[in-house]
Length: 208
Ligand code: GRF
Image (cartoon, rainbow, N blue to C red; front, side, top):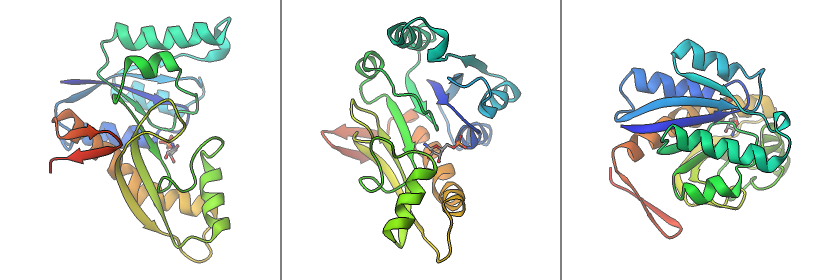
């Protein structure tokens, strides 16, 4: 069984999609060991409690230095023998010590088709504001491995979603979640848990 840690900062609809997929056996060979949040008000923590797994609050502000937080996060993952770290709307920069410990074992969902509308400062509604300002007709979501850059790791899966005339950032955000994110992230976890994802440099090969 692949031991998952899901890291969250907000509402946790992607976390919910993972939990639902495990219950429905659309994800096999994986279990959520812990849900970790930097935000004590995150509804995602309630979802974790309702699901029946650990809900762990680890906030940088509760540690004397950033390095202390980084080491506490790493220790939390190591103590629980986590195999795969899933960033599902996690707004904290993952520290280098964690990235070094988990090469190609951290995945992130980003609400655009990388390399468009990504990188530093491009998160949450900003992504969709930028897509609408540029006038693209298609956006979507990307699941990728996390490396030391921002949204630069190898791409695992992408799904395109149409932009409609009159979209607001909120409407586009919701459509991308419904039509892409809630499918892509559970699907990726299932593929990894069943040994079907292979990294070859910047290319990710999937046995389907
Ligand atoms: C999603 O749009 C995800 O792509 C981005 O943050 C948002 C998280 O939403 N990284 P939720 O907390 O899963 O509802």
